[in-house]
Image 1: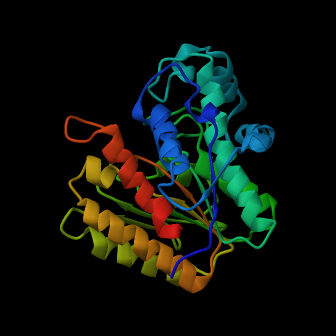
Image 2: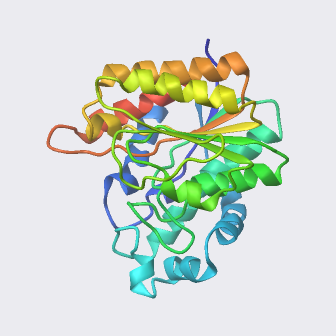
Image 3: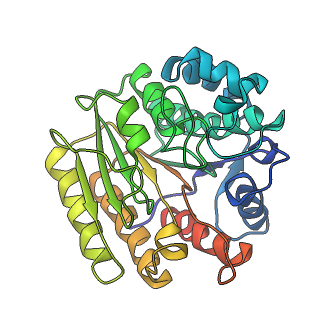
Length: 292
C-alpha cells in the first residue's frame, strides 16, 4: 500500500551553520535530489513555522540552554552537541524542529496522513544540553506540538542505530509511547509502561523491527506517529541497504493498514571512507520513496 503525494519540509536554514558535518549538510543534498525528481513529493518551505518551533523549543528545553545556543555563551552549553558554535547553529537547529512542527500541524489540522521533514540531529538532546550531534530535540518539540493540537496519544518510533534517551527524558510516557530498535547502546534508556527498547544486529534486524511494530500495536491506537528513520544501522552497524529498504516498506505498510497520521524525520546516517554523501542520500531517499 502507498500514500498519495505528500509534503516534505525543508529550506536552506537546515544547512545554515558554518560547521560542516553530515548532520548539518546532508539535508541539502537530499533536497537537491528531490528537486531533481528522486521521489514524487512536494518539497515545502516550513519557514512560517519557525516562530512556533522556537516557542516550543523553549517549552521543552531549559531557558538557559536555549539562550546559550542562541548566543553562543556559555560555550560549554552552546557546543554541548559536539559542534563549534557559529551564528548559523541556532538558525539550523530551529529549522529542523520547524519542519517537524509543520508536518504535525498539517496532519492534525487537515486530512493528510503522511508528511516528512529532512530533519536530523534530534533524539539525544536533553532539557539542559545537547548531546550526540543533537542540539534541540525536535521529536519532543513535535510531540509537544501534537499534544497542543489535540493528539491524546503519540507514538515515537525510533529506528536510528542509537537509543533515543533524550526523547524519553523529555516526554511523558502516559501520552508519548516510545518504541526504539537500536544497534548500539549509546543513550540507552529504561523502558516502562508500554514503551519498548529492542537491540538488534545485522542478522536479526528485521525481526526486531517487526517486534517493535508488534509492541506499537499492543500499545496503540495512536493519534500521531513520529518516525525517526535513521540510516546509521547501515553506515555504523553493517545492516544491509536491502534490509533498510524492506524496513521502510514495512513501516509504510504498517502505517497505511492502520491509517495513522505519520511524520518522518531523517535521523542518523554518516559518510565514511566506505559511504559517500550520494550513497548516504540514496539511503535516506528510501524513506521518502516508501511513503511516496
